[in-house]
Amino acid sequence: MKKINLRLDDLLVKKGMAKSKSFAQSLIMSGKLLVDNKISDKPGRSVLLDSKIELKTPLYPWVSRGGVKLDYALNVFNISPLDLVTLDLGSSTGGFSHVLKERGAKKIFAVDVGYGQFDLSLRKESNIILLERTNARYLTIKHISEKIDLVVCDVSFISLKKILVSPLDLTSNKAQLVALIKPQFEVGKKEVSRGGIVRDESVRKKCCTEIHNWLESKMNWKVMNVIESPIKGAKGNIEYFIYAKK
Image 1: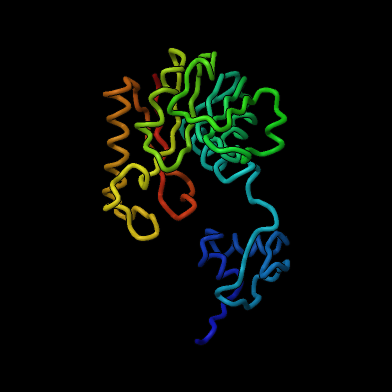
Image 2 (image 1 turned 90 degrees about the vertical axis):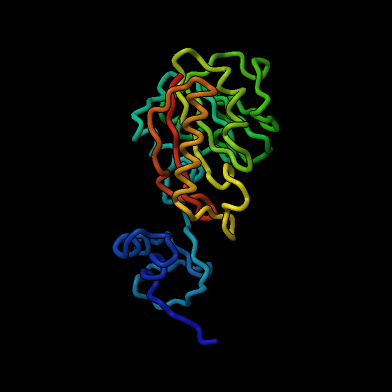
């Protein structure tokens, strides 16, 4: 089979690592790009289509790409975590918690069913209370004794309708919710295409509507807005943020 070569800047755009050719060129010339484990700073370099391309350092200031998502959502929704008691559901590496910390949250309860993923630097922060090996579905005042002012959520392999019930019961009177809707974990298997992608936009929109209606009719929260996440999920799924108030 004939091997295909492309300019390095064109390949970055093709792979979705850069939104434009000019952005790709600036990224390459910054010296942060590795091609087959070697730094490459020449945008016009010819490389194989299947070359291994990775970043030497992250393009974002957060410990994970999740931080990019929440940072964007808080800006769009005009939410300030300053001096709030917050709850990060599905904390994982700590991207959401990192954003909350940098934006001045008074306290952050970081909850995850897993163990050992949370960033080491964040573990040292005195205002972050890490609850690992903890299933958010069963949170009680035994886990969190303070009323939560802001809940942020990024969970996988479970519906928001299941994961949010108990946490929302621990919130203050004027609490806010910012949750990531992942259609692939909300819809039936028949609506998920090969590779775990929900490609049908109407299915994704229906999913958002169902979460919207559930929050208002079952949980008595007021939905303020729903927006598309600025970046796709790890497998390429389009995801959405829903913003609600108690």
